[in-house]
Figure 1 (cartoon, helix red, strand yellow):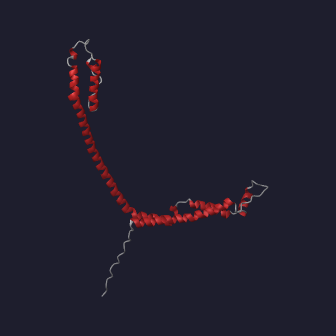
Figure 2 (cartoon, rainbow, N blue to C red):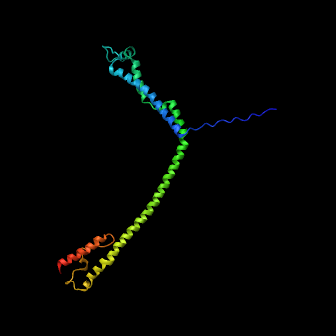
Figure 3 (tube, rainbow, N blue to C red):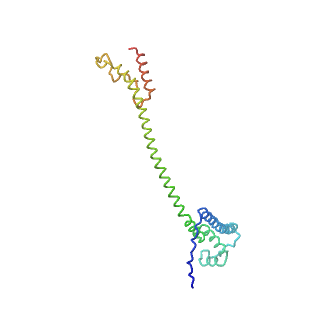
Length: 223
């Protein structure tokens, strides 16, 4: 009797946690920096040779100083062309992009694959939180604006009440029958009591003080 082989179950590769993926990637960043440091140190060593003048310089011949053939021959037969090439090459290598490094580029891809789903999901949730908070803020602002408008209306109404209950009766009493008198005996009603201030935009204290000031002004005239 033949026994059937059960199908093999392939293990699903485990996705590292965000913290583990980031830790590995940051180590990769430090590793590629150390690679660059080695080239940088080599560049500084080559640079020191050039600054100190301790390398063999190209010796140009005398007699035909502007001969291209003479210069080409001097470059090939004198001086330290290898050191010069190293100096230039090390400098060019230091400034190259780390993304040209295969190992580092692989780590870039690895960390993106590891954190992309969770990072985007968390970002989406945070965006929703921001939108909800902004909505709450807008609603709160509308409520507060309504409350401010109500408070301002109540303030204006109170000031109008002072005008209606105190200033208006005093003005009405002062203007009583004046308009019926010949103009030679009374000034225009428009010009009476110019010091008095009133209305919803005038503070209660200013309204009452203006009434008092007008009274004192008229009493000082004694007319």
